Amino acid sequence: MSRVRVRGIYATALTARLLDAGHEVVDASPPIRRRFDAAFGTDPPDVRIGTSANRQGVGASGDPDAVEAVRDLLTDAGRDALAWPDPTPPGTVLDGEVTETLGGGAVVRLRVGDGAEEAGAPAGTPEGYLPYGDVDARVETGDPVRVQVRASAAPWTDRRPELSGKLRVGGDLVALEPGSGTRVDVRNDEAARELSGMLDLLGLEPPDGWRAVWRPSAVDADTEALTAGLDSAVDAAEALREATDDDGESGGIDDGDADGPGDASALGVLDDRSRLRDASPAAPNAGVWVWFGRESRFGLDDARRTATATMPGHHRVKAGSLDASAGVDLAEALCDPDPDAAFPFGVVTDAFGPREGDALRIDHGKPDGRLITLGEGTVTDIDADGTVTVEREMTGGGTYDGLGVDREAGDVAETSLKDGRWWYPTTYRGRDGTVRGTYVNVCTPVEVFPDAARYVDLHVDVVKRHTPEPLAEKARSVASALENAL
Image (cartoon, rainbow, N blue to C red):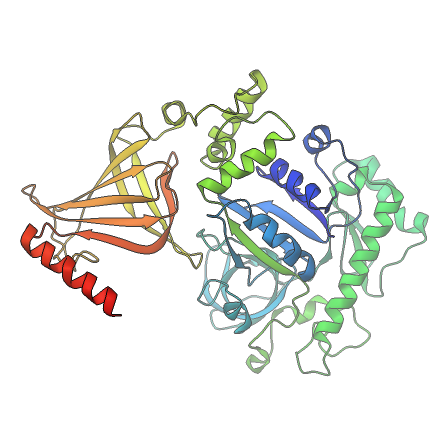
C-alpha cells in the first residue's frame, strides 16, 4: 500500500476512502487529524493528491506504481468520474522549444513523446509557461530549452504547466538543488537557525554539488521525518541522474560531467537544437488528473459523512466558487445537516448565483479531457426544480451541428439546463421567432455553478428538425429497418 498526502476540498472524503483501502495517509492537515481516529505519519509520501485550480477534480502525482494504485480509488467515486494521464507531472524534466515570449515569461512547446497520448492523455502537444526569473539565460522565440515541471495543470483548464530552468528534487520537508551550503525557506528566524544546522546535528550530508533547501513544513517535523525526507531527496537526485546519464544518449542533466550534481547549466537554453528529444529526458514521476462529475461529488459526500457532518451537495457547492465553499463551512459549523435532505439548489443559487440577468457560460467537456466553451448567454429564467434557461444571440455563418440549418445573424439559442439531468435541449429560433430546430445533447449530469454550467459530452445527440409527422414516421421506419439489417 502507498503513503499518500492529500490536500484541498476533497481531502476528508479521499482520506476516508484511502484509509478504508489500507493506504497510509501522511502529513495530514490539522482538520484531518481531528476528524479521524487514526495515526498519521510524517514520512515522505509516495503520491500527492491535490485539488485542481478550479476545484472540479484532483491531480495525483508521484511514484508511478503508487499513482496507479490510487487511480481506481479516485475514479470509483462515481460513474461520472473521468481520468486522464498527466503528460507533465511535477518533477519531470522535458525538452521543448520557445514558441512565444510574453511580458513575464515564455511559452514553451514541450516534447513528451508518443507514449503519453497512447496512454490516454489528452491529445495535442502540451505547452508550459517558463517565467523569466526561473531561467538564467535570455530566451527568444525558437530557442531549444530544457526545463523541469514545477506545477502541472488539469486538461480541462486554460492554465499551462509552470516550468523552471533550474533543477530541484525532493519533497515537502526538504529539497535538493545545485549549489553549496544550506538554504532555509522559513520566515521564522529562530526556526531557520535551527534548521540551518540540522544537517550537522543529524550527521547528514547532501551529494557533492547539491545543497539542502528546508521547506516550511520542516519546522514541525521530528528528526526521523527530516532524515527520511533528506534520504528521499537524495534518492530522487540519484534517480534523476541515472535517468539522464545515458552515455550521452539523452543529453543528460549533468551535461556529461560525471562529477557534477546534474547542475542547472543543463537546464534552460540549450546550445544545440539537435539535443531536443522526442521524449522526457527524465520522468521520475507519473501523474493522473481526475474530473469529478455531479454523481461523483455526491458519492464523495457519503464518504466524508463517515468522518464529519456533511450537508447534501457539500462537494457540489464547494466546486462552484470560493465564496460558496466558505458558505458551506459556515453552514456545517452552525448546524448538524440532515443527510437525507434534498440538495438545496434554490438556496444555493439565491446565495451565490446564477440569478436572472446574470451571464452564464456553457462549459462543454469532452471525454478526452478537453474543455470547449460553447459561449456565454444571459440567464432568463430559474425554476424551483433546478432548471436554468439561458439565451444566446448567434453570429452568422456556417450551420448548426446536426441540424443542417444555416446559422444566421440574430438567431437566438435557448438552452434549458436542469441540474442533475443527463441531457439538455437547445432550441434555435430565427429573428422572427420561427423555430429552426432543437438539438438535445446527452451528457454527464449537468451542474449549474454560479458562473458556468458544466458537464462532459457523451457523444450521443438527438435532433428535432420539426419535420412533418408522416415524413418523420417514414424516416423512423427506415432507421429501424437499417438498424435491424446492420
